[in-house]
Length: 294
Image (cartoon, rainbow, N blue to C red):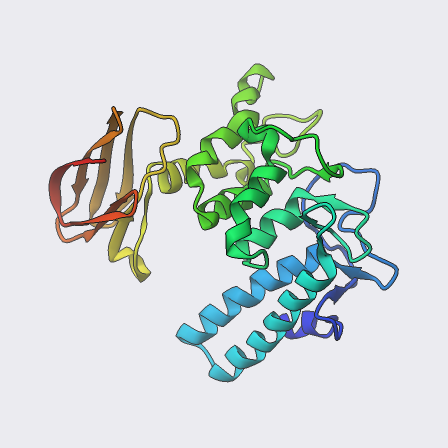
């Protein structure tokens, strides 16, 4: 599959327009999305290509063929260089959707962070600018108009916030989900606008992120043989969560007071892992433990 896409990768590293439907996100806009410049190149589809190549390098390196690792690394390096040289608009401080630098989206900029096209030291500021309104930051109206990500694509916002080290801002981005009840929804809609309660899977990702990002419970090794618990509570002062594991239930209860986190953690017997809070790591093993951390 990646070989097929590689056939559309230009010498400058960017992907040209590929046949059929290039789906990015289910949104309504008065322009083509994804968009292309006069040479038929798209920064946005190239960002997706970069993400796929990075995953392929990891998978092939662990389980596959080293020849493909080197091949994909070369394609990846070319794509990243092309995105930085052709799509970064220094004038407005954003990544554009095409090298023409006429159209901008939240999508391109969150993928620039997630795929490490944007330099690490710039990632937090870039996300806060692109999602300023969600995070209650000033300056949300500055710069060019942005095509906004729909419910579905905000899954990648959670990943980007975590990657940039500001996962504590995640809860601020759930305003749309809080509004669903006010709009009469009883379950997840598929898309914005005049729609219905579909119990649609792609809008349900906060169900996943509340456990893995906010409560902080996630696998620390293949097969979930170890667990890592690193909560990102934002403004919450208390939280309780239970996570199913094949050895039993993982249970956490948090309370924050005067800058101190009190955490009650219970792991099933036979499961080990670590608890991380503000850079400090504490080893965990099966059974109950109480932690007080600043």
